[in-house]
Length: 83
Image 1 (cartoon, rainbow, N blue to C red):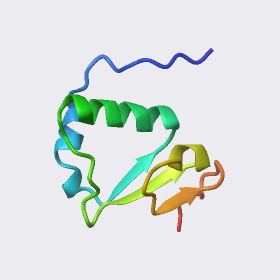
Image 2 (cartoon, helix red, strand yellow):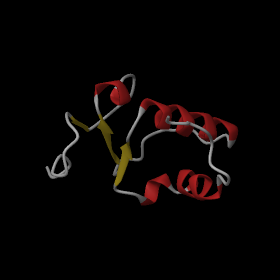
Image 3 (spheres, helix red, strand yellow):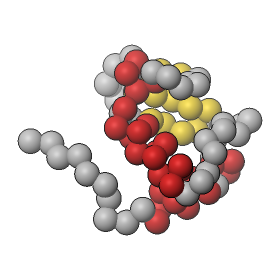
């Protein structure tokens, strides 16, 4: 059985959210990850506006729903992100 719960520490996520403009890619792996990211950004009062250089990839259509995504991986294969 899979259990979805928050991590013990949010320090790494908080640090990453505060410096989104320093990353080239944000890869979203699930709708749960998208929701958790948005909720944490809101709690920190960080606007999730996409920095110009940041590209967003989503694993699957459900993960990409409702967001500005540059690339959607259609399947789960080791080479799926090699474009």
